[in-house]
Image 1: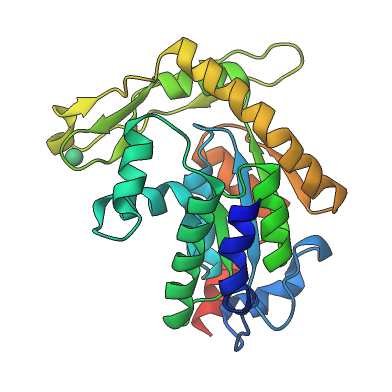
Image 2: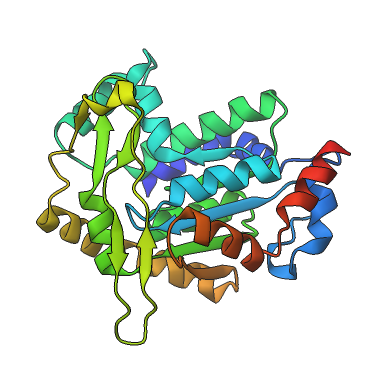
Length: 279
Ligand SMILES: [Zn+2]
């Protein structure tokens, strides 16, 4: 905790500044009236949302689509870590050591990277955010709560058998680093749950011959990863639930089925948003 206090103290004024973006009217303020109260941003600023969901659920995909729609940055802490690793930044060496040892990156470092990212965005005139991969722990959620206000937390969920199958289908292009999925999912209805099908996300031809599977995408590791995730995320979900900010969303299938349903749940209309963005 001392480390956090040290981290927060010198920059606390900056942090609150950057989290409480003052904002001139943008496309999304026009949409605000269409969204239920729980997700209404404060009139003076843009949406400040958090996306929760276990590894493999497709959180990044939906967060990124919504960020395009709403005109707010999609900030994924996984990307921040990768970018820092690829840079010659001050944290890069320390981070490489942690990652190479297979350790979890500390809350302090993550918070540091996040602050830096928000600050950089702020100077470019960005406002609002959809956070993806943060907060991951209750402690992170509490710290975030001290520096800014979160309007809405979307918790994406997917049938576990489908989730595991989906994780096992993941492939990465060893050349360009893009992710694909070769799993063609056809889960039967069971225990009152509807069936579900998901098309694979196949690579373009120039990536097809260079696909690799992550060494830790085995059934055992995937299930263990989920167990660890649930253990860590439950307090985070509880935290936001008690604030009345948690929206649970059961993904009904792949992107084609889920995306319209998600927009509906958020009371967003894609065409209206696009039109108001133009206007
Ligand atoms: Zn490629």
